[in-house]
Length: 363
Image (tube, rainbow, N blue to C red; front, side, top):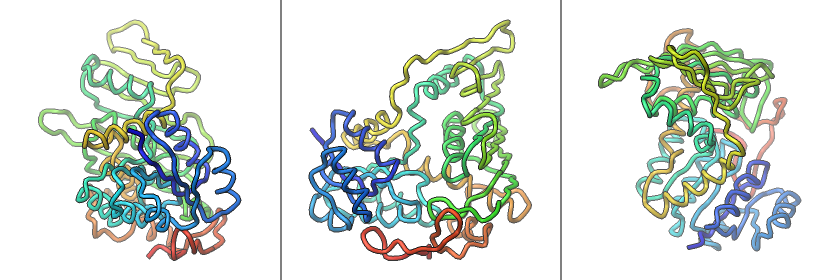
């Protein structure tokens, strides 16, 4: 069957979604939504989409899509996802990362989709990257023994926009086990905003996944910088019997070395399939077979929760225990002393009224 797809928001990331749906061979984009008439018209022309809207609610009522991509700024993710989940025709939703900016919002999104049998995918497409799958398979094979330490670097971008991918990969390589403790230091920077919310300059976090069911504990270090430094999603995984590296600068995509080996095993990936296309195919397959996508609401929740724990730790200057309570005071707002007003890159406030939302403020 060809899934009827609607894309809400037609900015940069929406092009990844559109190309992925086209390449999937299982979907037809029937409608797009954006409040910017010029950008919406250009997107429609580029992809030959029949119907366009300024208001996503009108689109949902008129088009009855099977699958919805949510490609707007993060503060709008909860409202749109929950509304789409309440549309009788919708069977699957791909929400861009971060899933949301607060724990209660993410909880509502996940709960609503589960109650209505909707597959909720999150835009952590790197889980489908060939090199990432190769590392995951190496770990799962047991060839290097259990994972004991993970050091991860995201050398460009902020926590919620870029390093969240790195954190999600750390979770993936640790079989999505629950992180229990986080100790972090975060430099709040000079008042920069991205996608409407404040962002930091640099940060570092130390985390622990405790021993469980005979599986050893894992010690984690994540470094992030909102400026270029060496390594982008560069991750070193120390196992009992060897080390695996992914995205080491100047090296093949994956480098593995056993402690007793005299040489390194270099894994050349060749031309890697587009991970966004693989993520879309996985979501569509999840809808067809009534299963969770590989990148789903729970895994998306854990990545954001880790970041919120970093803000909380930096604010309290102490170790933070996870999972965080849904009632935890909003760490993002408290750390940055943010009033919740959605702002542009240098802190200029504006209201995103009209098609997509009715407020320019996080309540």
